[in-house]
Image (cartoon, rainbow, N blue to C red; front, side, top):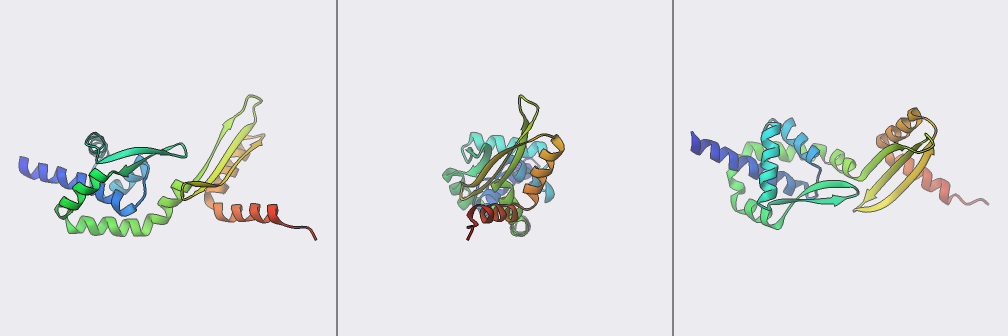
Length: 178
């Protein structure tokens, strides 16, 4: 039984490394947790323990990108995965590959689109919206509105359709009067 549980432990840690490799980009702890939990591979607390152990072993690390701490696979982690990937069951590999294929656009959007607001000294709400492309700012805009309702509305609107809003802003800015 002990051998079986240590094989499962190794497989689960390798699965975490595999997810990071397949994504080909760093992701948040929340996104990694969502992928694992939605596929019912590992429970939340065990996953967090595995992440800690993988960090300690330097198979993964955190990097900061646009005020977000993202997890990425290290070279050491990639080497371990290349040696032991065959210990992950084919069904789990297929499940992860399919899940990522169907969710990659959403995952990328969550990493590249940002919106939030804060209250200012004079009780206005400062909205900050941002879009990144290849880790470079495509747009980084701050604006002030008088109500929380407006701030929430603008943030939600930005999250729903950043491309359309970005294109409209660019069109307005580059519209030449004849």
